[in-house]
Image 1 (tube, rainbow, N blue to C red):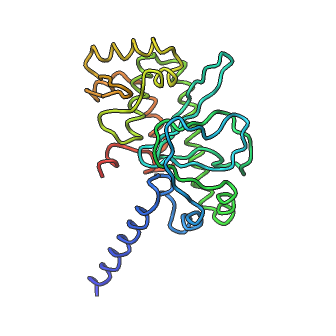
Image 2 (cartoon, one colour):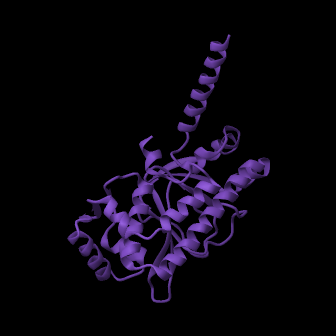
Image 3 (cartoon, one colour):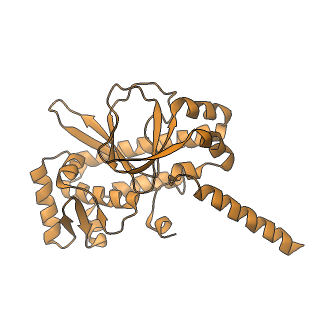
Length: 263
């Protein structure tokens, strides 16, 4: 009898694992209970989206929530009066962009673009709102994620104010690697890195050259290759770690880590 009970329990765990793994490869969606995800599933679509694809411009009505899946990344860019866009935060499979806690159809404040192309799960804001009205736990998960997103923005603001370009360069590269799951490279060009840092391309190139000289990384056409990840960590500020800690306290298991990637 005991063995039979154990078998039922193990079967239930296997069924639950299989159900979660059948969802889009987005940690926030996989964090939902089966009942909550069932409210969204009929309305979720997944499609590949190319890098640099524009999701929202400032002032656009936010009608669709976009969930990066796997190695896909989205980025928030703030336009400035000199014509340059400055990137504020990256969002990968730990989250979503557009209409997370609002009722939708509100104007976007920033430009939101696809940074690294790949699959994105999407749901219309009206469908998400209808599901949240039916489930307090679903509302709670998205409210918690909104808190984590705000923490990223706060941390990015502080980072830009007090940390050196070298520290921020190392931080951005590590952040991109964590989200894409690639242990040795990220598809970042000098121009894209300069936008992340809010500096000119020549400045970003000089920083990368100093890292190459130290044997920390190398560059190839359209990508940065990391030769010494520990060395890169030593040169980075601790902003990524602060954000990870907050995610773990508020939404445990959602932020990508090396251990979870290995698992």
